Image (cartoon, rainbow, N blue to C red; front, side, top):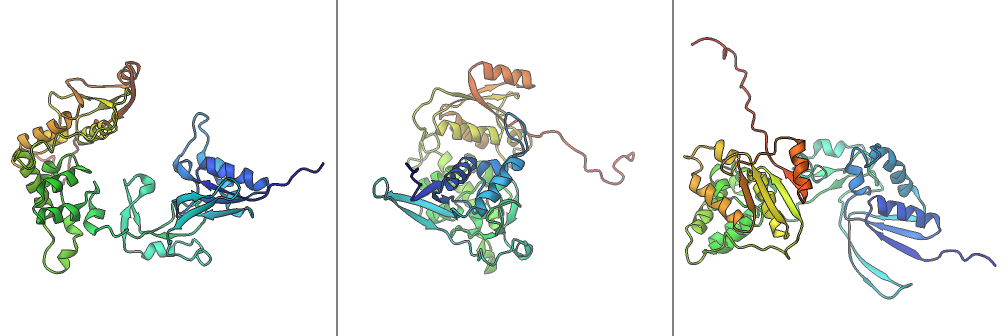
Length: 366
């Protein structure tokens, strides 16, 4: 009795190490495999790692042969930069609906030389490095990427001011709402991405205004000043905005506890985001008052303490617990927190050590 040969096709969604391995095994078994991912190339999170756990092996040394094998396998077709929309039919005769985004680069002609990157004039936040650095709008996720071709990323109709904002605040959105005198809605829109609108409305270096298109005609829109206005308007507690700042959109309450070390802007923002997901959050701060460098590094004439205190109070009002005068000095004290029932810890104690300007003559007397 002869063994029945595999027939049909298989759609694999997600091109991380799991999707790649599944595709290779299915393809070797004789199935036609369609490997789909929203990224321009395969590899997933593993391609971003240096070492693997727990063996501490080189991540790309393990992954690279699988990337090449997937790209060259005759039974695997890559559907990169694509979105899965739905599935219709019944087992054995499914039909998938897929939307393929344009790469704006011809895969058959691109040699992966990188010359297009050298002349590309546009820089955007690098998602591969979690937005910490910038890259060109013409890019390849990593040198070993499969397909080994570049992609031109369009801004999806996002305004230059929003692209320039480190927090990704929808600047054009709240400016439009303020123009319509919808101050409550404008304030809520700002706080979707930024829990310190009053602070940033005073001390932000406003890269959004630097990139504002209006500067080509007259002058940039005063985005920072408008953010300050709407934050102060909400802080006054008028009838229209009363209670807006302390509303919590928390999900269903969870039992897991998370420790946040450091009550600076990073730690407090992390605590607010975790509370919105329902986690029980405790913030440990070494100083007697929260705020970090917002409090100790910015003088009162630039950032009044009452503005900072109110925005911190808005965060604590969502259910975040704050313990001041409670430093976490070393790994032993951090491990003690984890043994005390905290499932995870966020370290946001900052870099507060000062450094000299190293100017000529600074050591001279007088």
